[in-house]
Length: 294
Image (cartoon, rainbow, N blue to C red; front, side, top):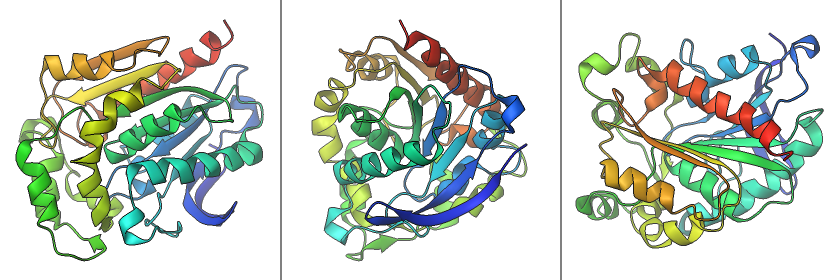
């Protein structure tokens, strides 16, 4: 299947870690992207590489190289000072790092396609809004929206005044998954292999600053957007109008595919329909490779 494994290396001015996997040379077609995957809060890059639920496996099987990142404060990636662990600062730092990764690993790829989940989805939108210098083909985001429940902000703000928060597994199972019929063994237990403490400031930022900024940020995105929100997401207010409104915020995107994804909870990848979801994202990425040439 090609090269596989964790990495930790100096990228620009920071240490960057994660996972990367490249297809064998004879598996590559002419029109393929380099996939960069950005996980959400409380998860390392392993979110995208759990056995049986791996976006990375699916990407490589389709001939696409893929790199899943540990964001600042996760794995070996250089952390921010606690007050600076915001969505905007993550986007700025990862923008620069991804540019370096493109120089090292872009090869014959048509460009980069970003996939981001939850807080990683908000960061993905924010990176795209920066109109990066490297070739961005499009983005796919999930687990992020316009508005979180009113009580979320006060709940996160009430967390202990410490830089990193380690959420109990039982609490994560309650909010990350849909009803029992939507997932099957080895979930939810397997998902905890990707668990990590989360910078407290991230949780506050996504439930406060993001609400005020999301429409302005989305309006700056000028690449195609794939958006899916889980039917049983417990971290966002979810209904048809919210999904439509999030998609409509990308007023300068040439193409927006926004829809509710039924039969799943917040971590769509970890559900029975996770494979179908990942195939949708990767198919959209492949389409962007050709449409970018128009």
